[in-house]
Image (cartoon, rainbow, N blue to C red; front, side, top):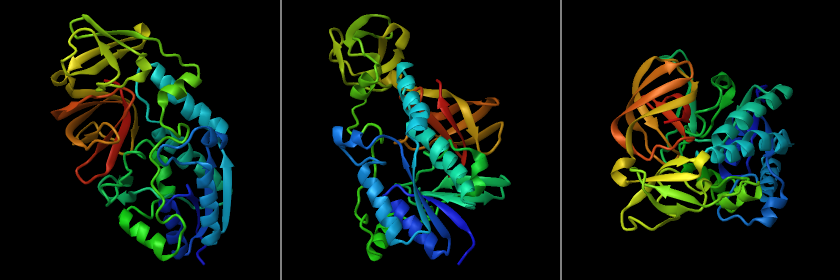
Length: 361
């Protein structure tokens, strides 16, 4: 038996379950860790539209898998209070500012690869592991540990982990980085895991039905109707409340002028509760500013690739450091609907994550 001890983040899904199995096969002592982020009662009051993480059934699945794999220990840790402070409040406040949040980025930073490391130390564990699809390695080129894209381009999660603290990298291990999802499901079936065909989580754990508007309303964020203007300052319609919109959106606006023109949300002005719309060709931009930057590799200027939202591909760009925590990104070709509040992640040509931060435009 290896003396190496690893804390395994167990979501109750197929990926973390197979990752735990692979660690056992590599003779690690494996301690399962399952976070409770919200009250279970939420899931009985609000039915899941699509699979979300951290539900009561996930807790049961994680426990079941831990027993089946004979893990060395299994802990359920309640983080509800901290999760509300750091994630839910951030989510609400970002919408109040007329921006679009990405709470998974901060959850990974503060909890999955933040608090989990503190818990790992209390167990004298050497590593924290998870079922994410990305690769961590020591880079000779950059003379430091880096994360890079996993080999399965459809499941790659390097974007979602691009905001974690660089100093945590020596203590992280991602067993699935060089594997494909189909292989993971095959292993799960072969060893008889009950979660072999379980759907992947797609929605936020604290909004099981994905109804953001209702959620914000329940937290006292009341949307009031407001006016919609075109780029020339003409009042052309009404909206249902600025928090119900994101940059690039076309739906949910009532027009009394220009009703037949294809218009998108161009800018949100929360202080005045107004929305400015623009035709499609005006929605493209070649530059953006990234603030609160998290550097994995320090640079002054680099030619690389930038990804501006979770469901978009990286685009070629020149990225310049303009202060210790601010980047300017200049794209080779204009990109559509750059959204303040979302995260921009910078990659090099080999898929190594160089930096990430919050889009400020």
